[in-house]
Amino acid sequence: MMMRLLPLLLAALLAAPAAAQSPIRADAIRADVRTLSSDAFEGRGPGTRGETRTLEHLRRAFAAAGLKPGGPNGSWFQDVPLTRVDTQRTAVVARAAGKPVALVTSRDWVASLGQAGSVALTDLPVVFGGFGIRAPELGWDDFAGVDLTGKVVLLLANDPDYDQPSGPFGGPARSPLARAKAANAYAAGAAAVVQVHQQAATRRLWSATVFYAAEPRYRLAEAPAPTGPARLAVTLSEAATRRLVSAAGLDFAALEAAAKRPGFRATPLPGVTLSLSGRAAERPFRTRNILARLDGTTRAAETVVIGAHWDAYGTGVPDERGDTIRNGAVDNAIGTATMVEVARAFARGPRPQRSLLFIGYTSEEDGLLGAYHYAAHPVRPLATTAAVFNLDPHLALSATRSMELIGAGRTDLEDLFAEVVRGEGLAVEPEQLPDENWYSRSDHLAFAEAGVPAIYFRAGRDLIDGGAARGTAWVADYDLNRYHQRSDAFDPAWDLAAAAQEGTIVYRMARRVADGGGWPAWRGTLAAGYAARRSESAAERR
Image (tube, rainbow, N blue to C red; front, side, top):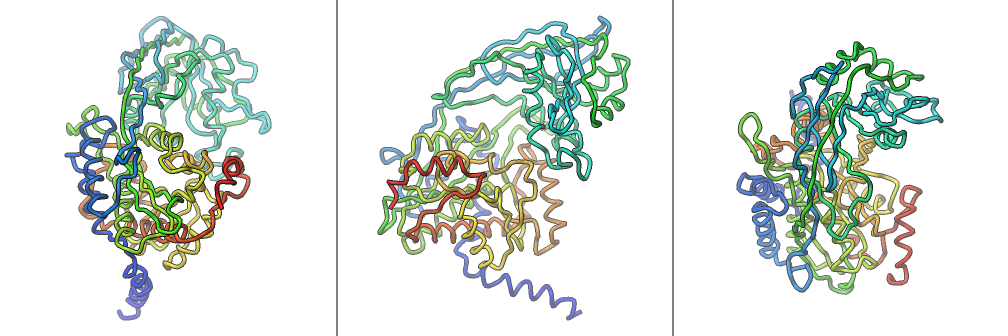
């Protein structure tokens, strides 16, 4: 028995010193997560009563810790003006040989518009376009020699080899070609594109697809309105697609198999037509970032930013249990609560040389809009903002042995990250799903595009209790069953030890940058554009 216990005792002893010395408290993070993701906050939707309650909670927390307002004109807040686009009416009507094929909204199809305008397409012929890949360099062109003019094109999700261990498109790793399929179809003359939902290919439940389609669309108010034609984004369930294909006298399984092989060409569905219509209107909309400042000492004019998005998806159509609230416990009450705890830790300790700015971004879920607004209207100059740390972990794990670096090969902050992680007795874990392009999907991207070195990481999956198998299983279950859904709710069983570890790494890295005299920099070809933008302000940094 003692021999079996020795590895566990050794792991505990190795983990204990770093945990004991960390100023980041898991219980404080847990308490804030419980509050922020409670039903009283109504899912923290921008522009709602939930926003008001969220920002007041954060303001009180920052003020209690001793931080000062960091927004414009001595305020805690920065207004973020947006334009909201609401899809008002949509319809999808199918016919085969002139007879209706029953399609029910939300069960069989969803549709939305991303800009104000209307669409009215009547009885257009339908073509099965496979995966919509145009890659002559790979000997693959699904549309070669096919006239798509005036037609509706059905497209499968992902790449032809997504269900294989490897292949010309990378196997399970989604390729950039998969993101270009709709554009390919429109460029080839298609009048409309209809995506086919398959859970294995999309890695998303149909219920999540229904939810996304019902959401309004937003853009920054100062951004130009789209100038192209309004296009209806339509998704068909796999079951509905099978019925349409069968009504054309074809077999869906055979078409799908053919689409996965070289030489496939888009195939008409004889006698099948679709009528698609929809309208959308837009209106002004306003939400807010929250900013808290801790003034530095000897280099107070220079800034280190630590941020997290406070927003989730608010309320919506009731689910089968009548629940309307998407609480956003993991995404991103955990990141927000961790940011607040890092602020408390800095406020309790010695003042850093550089000033710290803690930003709770709004409307991350709508396209990183709060972060982009700040980057366009910074309260502290971006030229002398040394680094940006982003807390958007998407995890609620117990203590881990590793930290996962997202988007490696971009900045020398990664060297500091590795040093700090190893100093905590942890390992650096390679990015687990690079094809998901996470580096380009969270708020730090707005700063990177403005030239400010930014780093993004999260707790790794190699858990002390259960190892990588347990951590990987938790992430897979969350991504499929709870991400952006009503089931992303607080679990009293969470200890959030991994969130405290993430906060510890952010705290130690930010402390090093804030107390150092150097300037983090971009590096490598992946960050060449960011580096060029940063170089424009080089004279302002000494």
